[in-house]
Length: 202
Ligand code: RB5
Image (cartoon, rainbow, N blue to C red; front, top):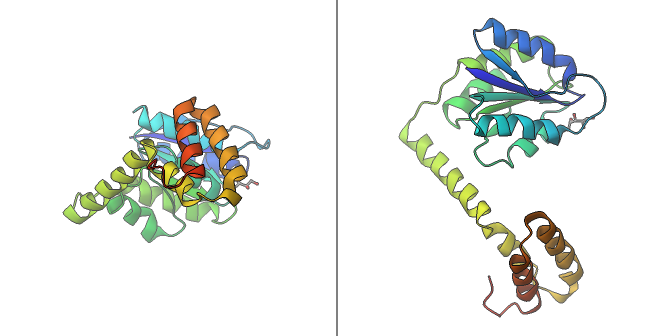
């Protein structure tokens, strides 16, 4: 397999050891940075690894930050990425066998180097079982991703806050959305739903 590896400065001390384990088990490395202990932002490296996987330039990924948490949260924002923090051996293989995770996240400040080596080995050796119940559950995760990409949750979030007291907050978020996706319509829709909750815009 090709394994995309990424870390922030907190994860960097563990990175070279993990690279050598990946290579020694017959896998290839796609290095997504960072490559020093200088302070960086974990989301950038979660994005690098996630994009590499969804572009099919790697089969799986390993991400390392201080706790494993921030980098997993960021990676899971990318549709198609299923990242899990696994600091025990059972989870490191079960998360692939049942949940089909494609990114293992580790906290270099949480686990020792030798434990990390075993976690990486367990992750790399595991395969998804393809059992019906796990396939069904993954299908429901895909449903969530599809709904998120269609704006389902954004509209519900804003409608749930359709209250004059929340108007400034909602407007700020709507403006942010507009600047991100360039959609004046969605911004207006949110604005109308916010001011006139019974307008039918939902
Ligand atoms: C960096 O200091 C640290 O916050 C980061 O590596 C990570 O632990 C975040 O979840």
